[in-house]
Image (cartoon, rainbow, N blue to C red; front, side, top):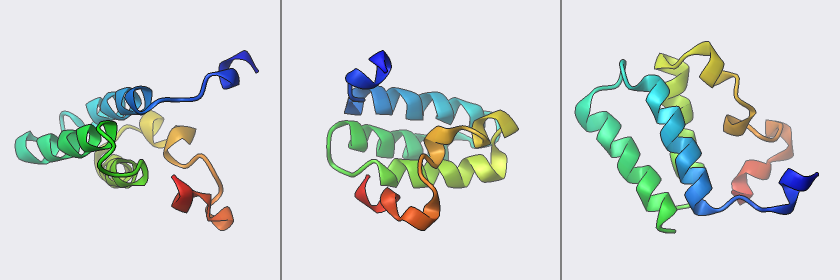
Length: 88
């Protein structure tokens, strides 16, 4: 419960997203990886919502990522049936 007292910030979310980007580093080269990093930075600056880089990373992780990265609850924190990801 102590961990839940401190809400996640844009900076901490961006850090997690960049860490996940590392799991596709070998498979996604140059310009595509830079585009993803740019979207993550846009989220950090408040220009797009969290769902944008999260959806993009989920797509690439499903195609190129490790099984470990694909299993992370961070990518899909709520069951799709609840429709809560629309609020991210």
